[in-house]
Image 1 (cartoon, helix red, strand yellow):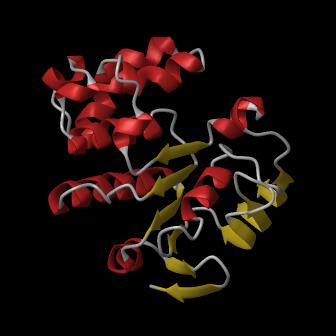
Image 2 (cartoon, one colour; image 1 turned 90 degrees about the vertical axis):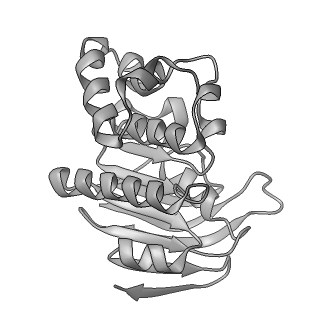
Length: 223
């Protein structure tokens, strides 16, 4: 169970981006967070993924309050989340080959022995041919690089996936392919999903329920 209770967060305590937001995501559930640009959706995604400490409120994982964030959070909490952001070029170290981008989380958690098999498996899953893996980000398209970012998000087999505008910069066929990868992963693992975006049609088709957030109030619709 993932619970956000009365979350207020921002980058300057005097002007919070999000005020008093609450949400529960149950095991295996897909929840869409829909709202206009600037309403705080991405900030909420970062709080949920333990990448940004809220100014107030509580985040609970399986009933236990989260007390530390980013690198200070316990490994079992940090690795429970896989995150895909909107702009892959801001998420990828331009110096690394694609194979190393996917392998980063494994090496960071002392699981380097798994790299060859896991990277090959995930590259095939997300639709990357072996010849692409030796390239660097500037040598591939945005769609190919977002496939890399999704593979990296899945490499530690997370229990929760956070997709923050994952398909916003992609064409329709690539978007459909990446959504299908996420859904296949969820079917086989029981992982939960928080999908953030402004495409109402996509979120309503993808998710069990959609939360409409305009920065002040929240409405919920079920699929």
